[in-house]
Structures are given as C-alpha cells and as structure tokens.
Image 1: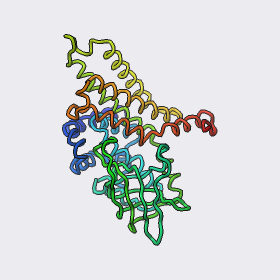
Image 2: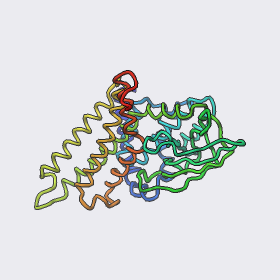
Image 3: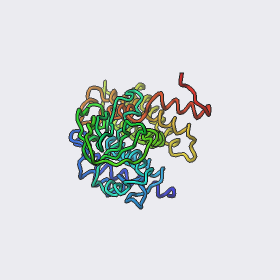
Image 4: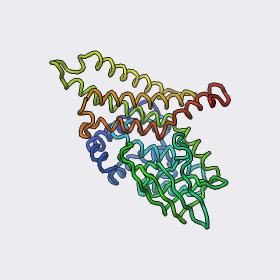
Length: 351
C-alpha cells in the first residue's frame, strides 16, 4: 500500500466504526456483538483482515491491519478484540499447519466464530488448564477464554507432545465473567468432551508463544484506539461541563493532564507506525501503549466524575477493556523479560 491508500483505509474504517459500531456501542456492551454486526465487519474485510486472499481474507499488510484495529477500538474495543483474536492468534496457528486451512474461508465470511484458549501463556494464572486426549476424545477444561462461545477453538493439549488441537465441537462455555471487560465477547471457562477435533501440530504452546509474541504492534494498536476513544470523550465533556462558572478545561489539573495524555498518544502513534522497528521497540510499544490506555481511561472517568461510571456515556467501558487488555494480552514481567533478552542478546532478567 502507498501513503494515500493507508489514509483512505483509515477514513473508511473510522466512518464504518462511527456509523455502524458507535451508534450501537451501548447495545454491544449489554448484549454482545450481534451476528449482524459481525457479518457487516466481515463484509468490510475486517474479520479476515490479515488472512491471505487465497483463504478468503483481505490480505492486508501490517500497517493497514493495525490501522483497522485502532479505528475499531476507538468505538468498541470488543470489536477490535474480535478481529485481533481471529487474525493475530487463530489464523497464524492454522496457517502454521498443513491441515484444516479450509476453515479460514468460513471464518472470514463470519460463518464460523473462533477462539484460542491460551490460558497456559498467562503468567498470572500459571498452568491451571488441562485438556487430555484419551480413547480418541479430548477431555478437560480450559480457563479464561475470550469468545468462549465460539464455533471452533484452538488449544494446546496436556500430553507429551503438547499437541495443538482444533476443536470443531464438543465443548461448552461456562462460568462467564462479564465484569472483566470486552463485554461484546463472552469471557468464560470452557469444558471439553469432544471427538470432533484435529491435531494441527506438536509443540502447541511453542506455536502459541510465537503467535502471542508476534502481535506486539497489534495489541499496541488496540490500546492506542482505547486511548483515543477515552480521551475524545473526556475532552468533549471537559468543554461542556462547568464548575464554579468555568468549563472544566479551564482548570490546570484537567487541561494539563488531558493535554499531556493526548501528546503521548500522538507520539506513540508516530512511533507505532514507524517503519523498521526493532524487536525491542515492538515489545516496548506494546507495554507503553497498554499502560497509556489504562491511564487515559482512568483520567477520562475522573473528568466525568460520578457520571463516568454510567454505561450510557460510554466511558467506563474503555477503563474495563484497558484493564482486560493488560491482563489478557500483555503479560507484564514476561514482556519485560523479552525486552531484556533483546537488549542483552541472551537470557536476562529472570532472577
């Protein structure tokens, strides 16, 4: 893509998000992303944004893809998370195998909804999930699955070869935890008792780790969208809301804080969209973008005062989703270990 094409894509994605997602953002938070909304996103090419054209996807390059993620997250972080799971986790795991790639066509057209159970990679949870294969059936439970009511799930079995499995049925979501964020998608544990599965490869956790690490800029883009959406609402409100006969924007603590956060947002955006970023820079972009999203969303709620906690204003979702993004897609200490390994060119920071 050329420069003008990227700007056209950003304009198209933003217009779609404002017209189709922003208007129904509260409904998404209360009732989840509708099938109609997901089909609309698929028709725009967003659901299969990074999936190769030969498998029904749009085949966007990295810069175009993160533009889509950022613009969707400005209106609905849940919509961006839907695209992120499909393109940054599920698709790479399928494309790394010689099997089952045909499912990607149904995924890109929104006929099939997908998820990846990667709770073993979450540092704070440890390896508490266990799905084993016995007598040609996969049985067990995996926890902390975003989009747990999907039609197909990829997970790593707890067996000697750590097989990567594609489950097409025989699983059920339970123990949903909506309060943790991304309310547009189910967030739950999944119980498995399935004979309808395929073994994609061995060393499933290694493949998941690689896919998870490769999505540094993807996660950063979602965080940047959350920052942008939260600050936009805070700035508009601080202009309209008055206290002691002055709009909130006239008070230094409000004006200086929001202005500093907006400047950080712009600097981070310039950095993320730079070319030829090193691996260390990508890791740091992920970490800093997520921290900025949490800070910006928190400040947006504070500017709104008590009103910030009302769903109708659409502010509190950014804070919930920024925290969920931090828990599910930015593993804190592990990301800093990755950064240290890049800097020292050897294992470092593990004691």
